[in-house]
Amino acid sequence: MRTPQEMPGILGQRLFTVYDSDALGVSRERLRHVRIRRISRAIRALDRQDQSPIELTIPERAAAYTRVTSFSVASYFTAAEAWGFPLPLRQDQTSELHITRPAGLSRPRRAGVVGHRSRLLPGEVTTLEGLVLTSRVRTWLDLSKELAVEDLTVITDHLIRIPRQLYEGRTDPYATQEELDAIIGLHPGQRGIRTARDALRLSRVGADSPPETLLRLALGAAGLPEPEVNAPIVDDDGVLHHEPDLGYPKYRVAVQYEGAGHSDPEQVARDISREERTRALGWTEVRISRRHMVDGARPAVEKVRAALWAAGWRADRPAA
Image 1 (cartoon, rainbow, N blue to C red):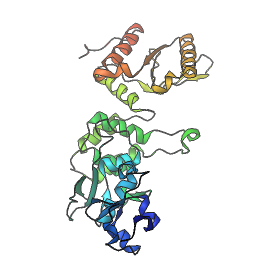
Image 2 (image 1 turned 90 degrees about the horizontal axis):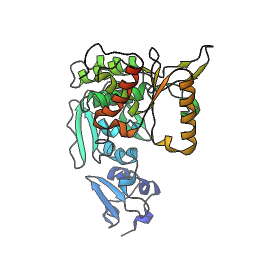
Image 3 (image 1 turned 135 degrees about the horizontal axis):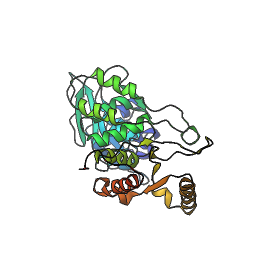
Image 4 (image 1 turned 30 degrees about the vertical axis):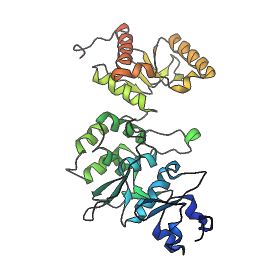
């Protein structure tokens, strides 16, 4: 029996189907070698010391599963991971693959796969690094069946934010609110539509991270006024000094979420300088970190509430 080292090189770099190896002239007998791993029905992998299948990227893992059964596409959480969506912690590292086939065909059934059937319209399927998968917009709509409104709003903000070309190499958002609204209209009555509509209604352009979105939603849920995203701080001469993550220009309260990168000594110095400038312009800066986001962001809400109260805000009704 020939050894796996004589296998075509491309088969050693990924999961492959027996049909892939057939096309390359590899006999089924060679696939019975001890170092050829059976991953699933008709899916194999060369057992390499430097890379096991579980270490492959989502496109590399899922592609074989879409090829082994005709008219199959990666979808739901698998497509979301491939697209880099900010998923909630309970979903962002699942080992199961989500595969969808068009309505009218049988649902994929195999170990490690969550199978779906759905109506897939033109433009809702695309490719990424060789993987056939649902588009970003269609993936968003599918996730509306599975996620809470807050989690889907985080993804909505991620899709519609305007990127910074200097850092991201692109100028267009992944999607617009109009595109998201349009796909909702194409699938009336689908489960999750209400969640999708609510997430779209709650979305705002400008949020740079999931904690910023979750903080904004928590402030609204607590009965505080809705903050502006990236509200500019401008001095009396019209000079723009800063655009805080969230802001209340009427009360001159700026809210900054400081993630892990803000612990860097140089960043700490810049943050202190920013706060000094903000204070000099008559604004109050509220600095929020991860520890303030526990218990539904209640500590963060109370910090912002105290700053708004000191600035003269009064609730129209008692907070819940």
